[in-house]
Image (cartoon, rainbow, N blue to C red; front, side, top):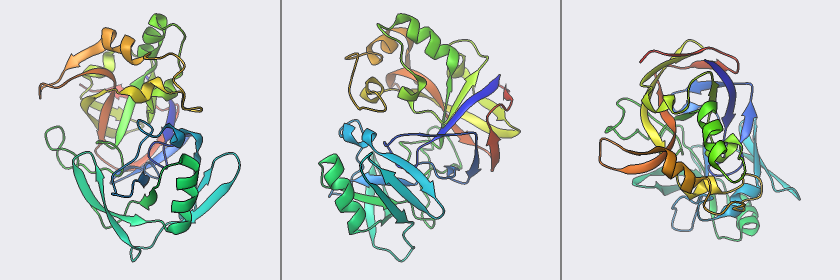
Length: 268
């Protein structure tokens, strides 16, 4: 197999940035979901509830971030560790994050029509992955795991069943591979990509977010593709939870650089 494409998401739930290569550090992809929008109770906000987030294109700057809504651009520096901290919540996890300031909060609140704050992941904070699925692993502001890998053939099969085909960006992957059979990724437990080791820890259960166009935020096909995916690939996990699966969550077992076009080897 080959690595077909790669993506990172500077701000959780905003638009993707496609890259030709990226670097892995202890948390995952450098620059991936190291910023996040929270409500005034410091709970994470995503496009599941606020589709307007999809209208904003983030870009990484040296030690900072740019946000562009098509009409204006906001540029920010990474807050220092001495900045105000907020106890933020993602699902069941609560931990400290760095507040990005009032200018960012005002700019974002206006554009998504929701009172909010922008926060950055603090380098002195450790957010560990659920040990039910992986030991000795960390992540940033992702939902749960450092990386997500998806398979081109699975999308091809899904698209055959849809009223109109959709692009892979609906599934917000970090890594897209070519050369495997559809749904093979559900069984991957050990991989080597560009010489680096990864554990496949949990198939990714999908939600309503995959029904939204990742440029406009609208739902052009109603409940598709989620409803069709549920028919094609619903699984029950070892914990008893059930979901419509697309892609495999990964934990990386080392740091280094991954380049598009690299070999992807399944070890088990």
